[in-house]
Length: 399
Length: 143
Image (tube, rainbow over all chains, first blue to last red; front, top):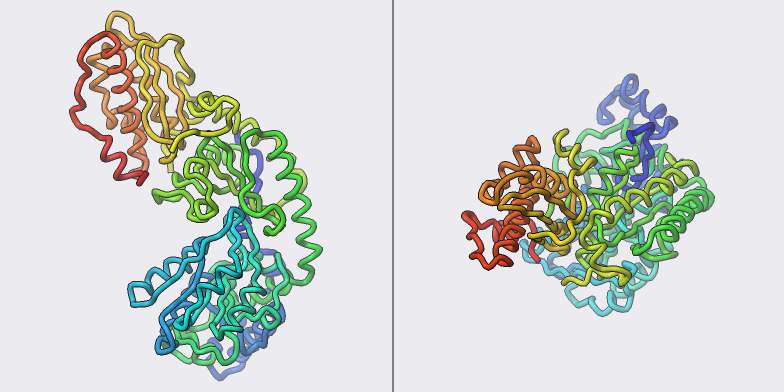
């Protein structure tokens, strides 16, 4: 044992920065470092670069450049979209609809707004993590001002029927926000056709730099500012622009959306081989998320009778980077809220493993995981008192 | 996150397995909480001559089981009863604060196995000096 090389299968957590992206950024640290708000020529270079990145980003979403606002990342974009719309439309109503499987950047923001007098409906999902459009429509009241539903789930990879939600929101004249942090580069997005009013994205999920993101705000949406100060981003988002980061985001989103279908097909083929290999060689496993409507790189699986952190430690020993929905790694006391929302029993949620493939992976990586993972699961099951107890029944049989 | 000692006992756990016809067996924890330990003791003339375990849980839970079984081997039941969760954690060169409950679970597992033996022998079970079970429930798991 002992790591010979690193196999990175945690692309949903973050991605490496592509060399083309890093190279595009470098001049904006060293040469074109001028503050875009200044008047001299090097500052004009900075401004030009930001404008170009705005066009690249808008193009990737089917938006107008004037509808793109750069932020510090997905969390800021989610906070801005939800708090900004909530406070700006308070007189119209105080009801927000979201789901039980959102990222904490959305859930904790909504919980904060509940303390501020807003009412929030957290829609349930089915066993695959899908939100039912009919249930969404029923939840809308006269006081509903915002619907926020993620495009694709970060843990189980389930892709939601966003266009259907958009049509419902439009019909009822309610703003529709989607956290598309996991979707960029994996699913074609068209904010106009899908009736999306606000969309969050983050550069480090598609081979861009960390600390840079964007919020698409459809022209005419009533929204308050989140970051107050200078007049940057057309007076909507204060703070000196992260020029190099914005340039990197622009380059990265252009590359990620150049051939979504072809790229996703390549990743999906590796991912499917991994899924089939694991499910066919290891007993008492369950695929979490939807069998088809899932992100191309996402594989989330539960192994009964074992716990996720011990799996991650052994995988790390083999040089494999992965993540789990078990409580034991997160510092929190509960396993993944997403897995629990799909109805997965708590004890089985503890044994979940997420492998997310991307451009860092090759077919050899899949071979290697398929070689070592069954051994790791066997080793841990051999020392698990639950495995013996359950026999062939395949159930923990404990409430 | 973990000390070298914890990683050693996680990767090379001592005393994994079961003991046929063990004199004392103690099962503690709950799979819903993400950890369950089963301790097996072979007891001869009031001395623990062998100790084994099976554990479902995180790295710290497995390492704590391994260390606890090491610590009680060769001890009299009175001595083994005094092996505290702190002793297990110290022998492991420390545990992260959120993982301290794993050492508590190991202590409880040993105690439960000893009392299982005492009850089978028709003796009064010993009483926990510092009951941890509620602390374990409150601190680590709502279920």
